[in-house]
Amino acid sequence: MVLLVMSSGPSKECADAIRRLTGEVVHSVRDLQAAGDELRRVEFEVVAVDQQLWELDSRLADNVSRICGTAALLIANPAIACADRVAREVSVALRRREGELRRAREEVESRLCTELNEAVTGILLSSELALASPTLPAGAATKIRAVYDLAMSIRERLQAKS
Image (cartoon, rainbow, N blue to C red; front, side):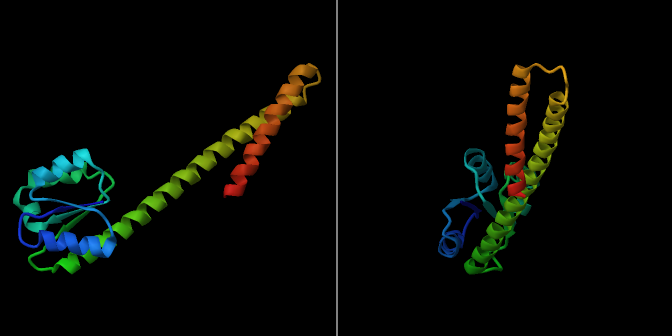
């Protein structure tokens, strides 16, 4: 979903061009105050703001940039760029955002796998040490062996992921 912030002129043409090029739903508002209200209610992938509005009120601009969340912020100048160019810039911002989110997801997954591998290694080592104890009761050994087998199963799944 795209939030288009334009006070006048080509806002309808820009919104139509963005829809045609990206297939995204486009919400249009006329000022930064309304943009802030929309951003508090809905999550957007791209926020495209008319450069004139952006430069008009730095306090509101700062507020919008803070509450954009994971949305890509695009400052466009529709007075210079035609609607199709603004749409292309939005399309590029969407692709860039998708790539950034994919890379972030991969990084988090990698870190989680590393942390889980470390925990599983600790469980396996502790289980092996416990199983090696000559005074371990048979019932406890059975339970520890079950924990060991589960940990090995988790390790195998984690290794298959990486």
